[in-house]
Image (cartoon, rainbow, N blue to C red; front, side, top):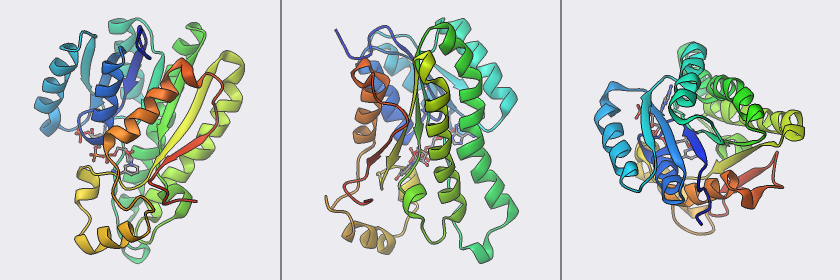
Length: 250
Ligand code: NAP
């Protein structure tokens, strides 16, 4: 018996990086996996990923859907329910950065990050709750960031969006606990993905010096924590922030 046997998971932003690692680990643990991507450039990768997950013997499907759109999120949940019948775990992972110092930050930089990283969490959660209630339970996992706890120069928009997910997570945990719906946040530190490849070497070096484990994390290490939170092993864990950061945040 695997940890996620017979569970259906929906993961936003599953075409690359942390989301792709979560999709793979979930499938390896027996979950049926629905995942999304947004850009046309990721279509081929998403289809290849869908096929490789199916080879693990589970049902898997990629959907092109913009998590920042309320309407697209609603349509996505309907499609996933039609294709998979239920949603046991929702992983709100889709996210972007538009880093720049506040003096240079435009309204567009702010809005893009807030809608993709925070409004998306509302959009997906809002539409996933009813089917989860019908199913008498569920696990919502919001991929936030330690930047939401610590702040970071040049990331005021990103830090605000990620800090917002903490308040959202704790509120949903309180609101939905009596329905056996759990909601937790995962706060990764610096993980090797396309997002951190954009950082220059000097910035990476300065981060590394502050990380007790002295290395960047791997997407799979974040995925392991998500497996735990999606599984019944975490049945009494809700409203929590789990940092996966090599000890960087206090
Ligand atoms: P990534 O490699 O840049 O991948 C981002 C993923 O999100 C892609 O699958 C992308 O789809 C998808 N996406 C972006 N905007 C979307 C939208 N509007 N609708 C649906 N999907 C969308 O990023 P990552 O490093 O894996 O980060 C994943 C999450 O972890 C993010 O929330 C990020 O803030 C958080 N995080 C990352 C780190 C880190 O060090 N990497 C640290 C802390 C937190 P396309 O392929 O179609 O573009």
